[in-house]
Length: 60
Image (cartoon, rainbow, N blue to C red; front, side):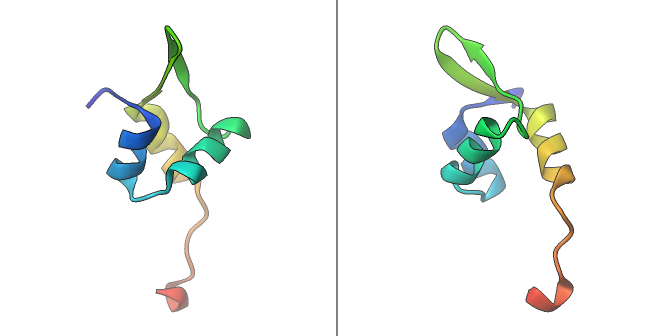
């Protein structure tokens, strides 16, 4: 897939739609606008995920 809606990005990453919307509002996740439809490029989604802090292995 080349681009995602907020919903499909959430499904693809197991992240909530709210978390994705928050990252967009905080300008941590880049979003594109196509006639009012918000799209997230797969590369931008991967970059955002890679920028998240490492998890504590004890928390798993």
